Image (cartoon, rainbow, N blue to C red; front, side, top):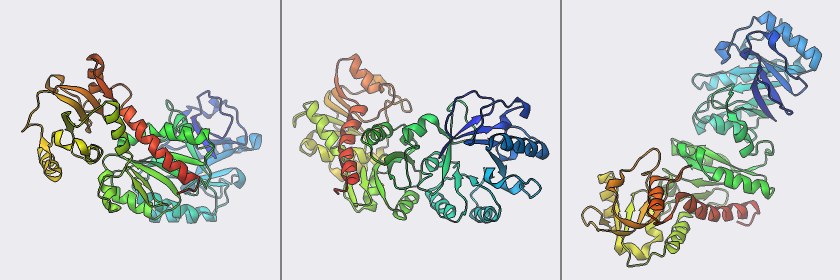
Length: 442
């Protein structure tokens, strides 16, 4: 059940489940929306994340009037509910909001209290800032004798809402992008992209694991559109992570996942977890398959640009993706020169792979520049006058508008492989793994 949460003064045609936030109104007499059995009326107090205060008696009289007329649902904070309020249990959503720190004992007490009170649903709005907490809330939901409406908040709030079926909840909320009613709320566009209306408790769950950039991954549309067009019961989600051990422990404690794309900065960390000697950008936990599809993408890029053993190559970077390039370009190693901003890490990289330093052995012009860093994106600008001379480019970063390096190539009629093209080549390979997994052929 997917519920659209709306300010009560907003005129929006929603035919499915909806919640009207009446605390956005100055007066309950202003309320003039279409109400039916799939409507939840909610009046949040300011200490519950609401906009305005309404007297308890006024709120109760209004709710009873609306229930009698429309048989709709109404929301009441569980810690403020008592027998004098006496709302019909079939129409009652008991809710708990916590915008502060995670308190597992308090949550256990809330669910125990809800189990003693007659109501149709229990709503939980709680900050989720780690995968450990995500695992704990899954176990807590199992102890509720009422269907749970889940409204995750915090760093993993959006992800937790997209995973509501996986968590065992009966419903979750989304909002309108320009009119949110809660922090970290999924937008309607995101709910559609993640196919939430089609997901089941048995849906195969996959996604991309990495830093904040995962929210903008091209894979979110690419894979979900493919699953939708081919009628696969699967979803591809952004798994934001700032502590890989936290994610890894959660992953090992659960089963049934489709698979995960791994991006910066975790390609080498997962390789260590899996005892792999090369960086990993794809992991299928149920089959214990690890792969690096970036190698194939680099090989396609080198072939597309017609690079040969005699060409001089400048490699920017010393992380997992730069290591992957070396694996894909073994036969070119003698003509690869490396540069990077952190000279300590750069020297370790050069020593580890026995490479040449671009600063100690400068070349007047390179045939190919390979950028495995964020340089040239909106977050890390380039100084074009400091650019080395090159005739072809492989640029790994991607963003909505062309990167500075791609723009430079376009302006100077130079051949290039953009981050989008590179991403697509490796994604095609990952999709093959996902399809085999879904068809049970792995």
